[in-house]
Image (cartoon, rainbow, N blue to C red; front, side, top):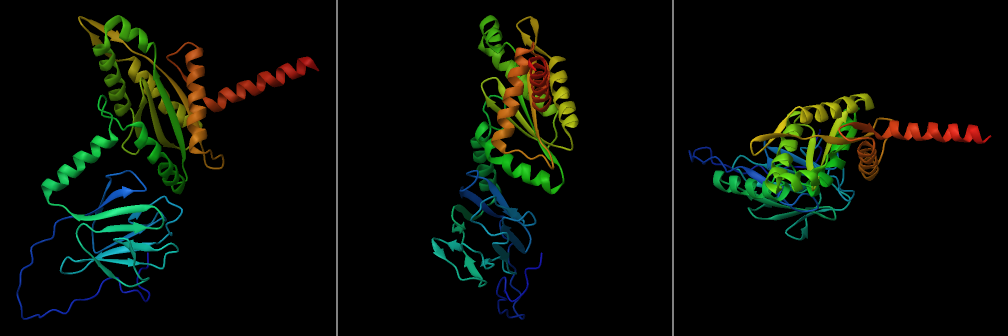
Length: 323
């Protein structure tokens, strides 16, 4: 990305080369999300120039319509000072509630707040190793489910849209797998809530073991889990879903002196290149497919598209008989 043009990213300080002052390496720089995204998310500022904007080729991408494709840059000079430059954005860049002039570097102090466009607010901070660890732990607590360690529902819903966009840039679609533990109430009633919790943790472990780092896995609520993953076809999505179901069915949860077998039903929905669906549509149709998997006997995978195809065929058959 060409950020040169007539814009001076950061001023060149006048230095007395005769001085041999040793400057300690600066602490790592971060932008902490305050508003307009996942609160507490840590965006590390690496290198001399960090670009911010809506386009995918920025160092940090923001999915907000009020942010320009190439909105602003943060640059660090030789002395470790940070400079913020607006790249001629449509809705402006603000530093501590004041709009900064376009294409003119402005120094950013530790603790300053940066606003991009209409709603994204970030806090610029330098963190020593202890502060960094504390901030990261606090963030993890806000986005993780306490029982299973998976992401929570809120974080999943914030991240699935950006995930779909990243997949499209790779010419891939996105599949959503809705996973629900079979007969979970019976497990709790017969074996107690401790065993029920153990079953949920086993489901979470199976999901982690059968997915990849690029997949988004979360506890959706109660005994229901959700997975979003990149796929090239609906067949690939079904293969991945079947792997999840089979791995869980092959494992056991210890209930006292006995081993308890736990199964799950899975509903699958896909948004493919050329056949795109909204995020809400993806989740809703995966949920319908999950309901069909439960109705058909549980411990199985149902594809929402094939389920709809079967409905259409039955409808056509009934219309033919009526004629």
